[in-house]
Image (cartoon, rainbow, N blue to C red; front, side):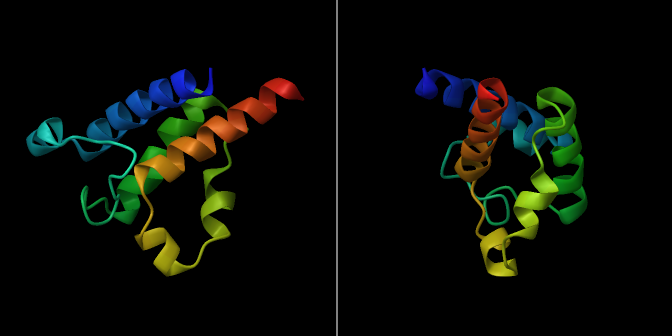
Length: 99
């Protein structure tokens, strides 16, 4: 169950990242669990804010991305991988459904 949900969330996040970047090259980039937002996708902070908004509108208010990122230092944020975000969304979603 969790693997299926994780795959679905990964597909959603990859789609949203491509929408936020809005560049033709982004369509050709493979976005997986090990993809880095900073190094591989070169996501700017303003694009990350736009991504956070899309995630919140798609998954609901229970996904507190700002709070999660606020718990990290700059190096952790710069090293952030797509998979960490996917796991965070899955974890938050499962907590919301069990409460």
